[in-house]
Length: 272
Image (cartoon, rainbow, N blue to C red; front, top):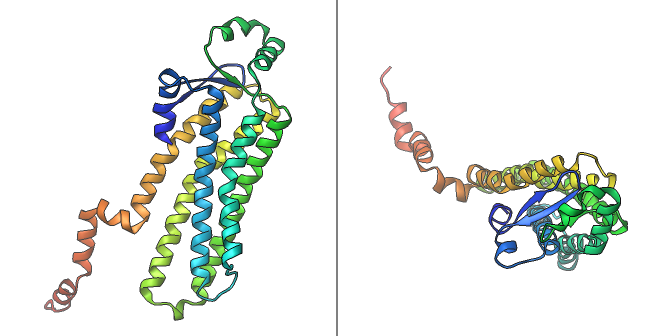
């Protein structure tokens, strides 16, 4: 996502209009329309949120096999995953339908900001958002999608920890530690996902309400979105064991020395 928003496309907000234009490789080299770039960006954002939801559902079903509570059969399980992965396509499709055509954008600017018409005509390409019917549908859908994500993650996390605690005596120490480590990593990734869900929700509200300082808000929304990949990479390195061990060898070697049997024996036989 960082590469997409820094190299492939860079969205430049235009004050005081709730919109802007794109620059980057997709615009300058491949001459991709701003409509498609905005739609592709929305698709990538929704795809990351849907992928995280799918991870929580898959982990929940893996842990639910311990006591077979809320364990889905193959068909319902496939339907749930299909609906989760369908969300990015529906959201980006609604967003594309909500975008105004070039004549309608010029008409909107002429009605709301008549003094900026000549400046917009000098731009080769731009996109302006308006609170039309499809825009309201789109951002209402995104808002409820974000709320659904929070509820899904909260419920599955609570139920997974509940299953582990109730069946702790019947699970090996290694499996119990592995499940809890994976859950902690998923929760940390969900915390960084707030850098996607939060800006998307705020953006939805801004479009519907026509906030007067939307350009400034859009600037900080873009900043928050570009932080997600870096924050998520750090979380993966620090919390997920397969990435944690190779990335921090000095710390891990020191911990192994402290917990090795040789170290414990030597410490236990020290003279008093």
